Length: 95
Image (cartoon, rainbow, N blue to C red; front, side, top):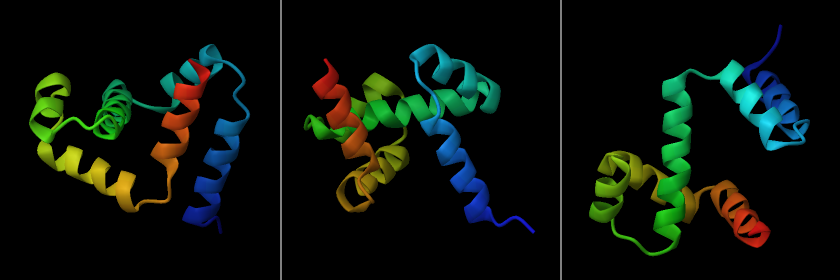
C-alpha cells in the first residue's frame, strides 16, 4: 500500500526533475487546474509582498487574496519550514 508521504515524496522528486520554465509550466498545467495554479501563484506573490513589508490591506487590494490567505502565508513565512524564504531568496539572487 502506498502512503500519503510516499506519494508526496514522489511529487517532490518529480518537481526536481524539471530543468526549464517551459518544462515546469507544462508539468504544472498537466497536474493542476487553472484555479489551483492561480491560488499557488497568488500565495507566492503574497509571500513576496509580506517579505517586502507590505501590510495585509495593501496586499489584499493588489492580489485579491483574502486576509485568511495572507495570514496563513504569513504564518508559513514566520514559523514554517522555510520553503517560501528559500524560493524567494533564490529568485531574488537570480535577478
